Length: 358
Image (tube, rainbow, N blue to C red; front, top):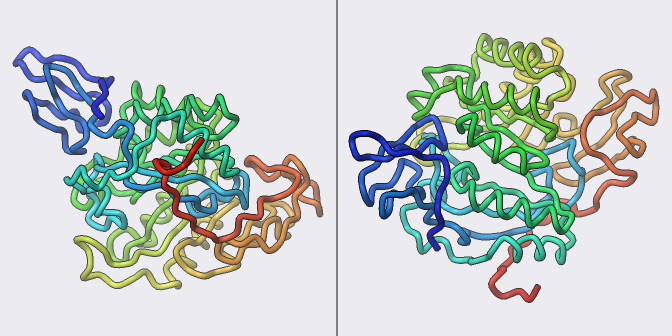
């Protein structure tokens, strides 16, 4: 299903310019942007993947990863196809770089997605797998339908979006995990085909001008973005611009797509990154894509007691009061917490919406 797209304008040379992301693709008739899903048709911008998905499944919310937003609860996750970055290490390249629209097997309108999430007892819906920025119109319509059903919306995104489009997109989200891929302009240019500054602008906007819950993920790639100096610069920037309370996840790289010649990230690199972040004052630093109970658990920044114990995606301890206060010292842990955690655990359950009755 094609749907009218927003955030574009006509140029004097006859082309139209997409203003959704900092790529600013300029298109002749029937051309598509780099994301592949936004297309010029009949002198306007259209979104070619509205109402279609590459698949739905129920995940633990910690897998997004979000550790301070309704821990232990199930989240209905889905994506479409395409992406507005070209990361050579993409773990979902078969979706993000897909040019086969028949990959979009499952069809669902926004109301069906919201009602399905409610029927399956999911507390939230995640726009993930590929970047939801490129299907903004579809994501916003779903988020508004979810609000009507009391379901939260979570964006898993690289944050590569213009300020104008970002304002509309993020005001409909309740939480976001932003993938800060490196703290180097050259890395973004050579490895991701983008720029660092727009991502930093997005992060500052989210923290300083919105109320959504924010967490950050950085995938550490050996020899690419894991130097001690870069980690110092990245974590110092986070403290100075976003604050000590924004959780950051350092995750392990596994060779994929165009970077299969590199080695996986050793645990020592993750632990070094965590120590640097903690030294620079970040309260909540997590390790991902590895089995590390200590690196997955949440600790009180004041008394250092375990607040939420985690073994992979299974919660093993819960020492928070309703509202997120440490039961030992009463210090506040920022996030969205309820009196009791969810009990979804580590299950992953595929869902076919076109076969459900809601």
